[in-house]
Amino acid sequence: MSYPIDKKAVYSARYPHGTIIELTEPIQDPYSPKPVGSRFKVDYVDDALQLQGVWLSPQSGSIAVIIEKDKFKIVS
Image 1 (cartoon, rainbow, N blue to C red):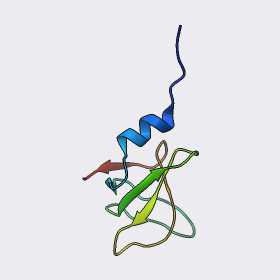
Image 2: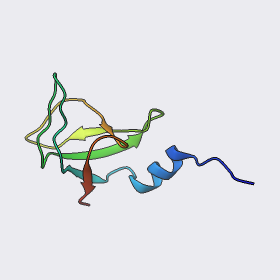
Image 3: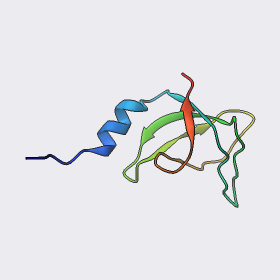
Image 4: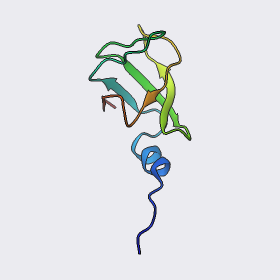
């Protein structure tokens, strides 16, 4: 018997509150693009499996990081 994986729980454990990530590829968004090297501090994983939080200076904006689409690494 196989059990469904609770992706939100897995991602919440992998990216807990306070985790800082850094983009390894740019986010191509027409309203709030983010270049490689931009850093983001995680607040939580939402129901759409996106990281919600804040962009660290000099970046700003409220665009979420899409876990299964955007390319990034954990830096702390």
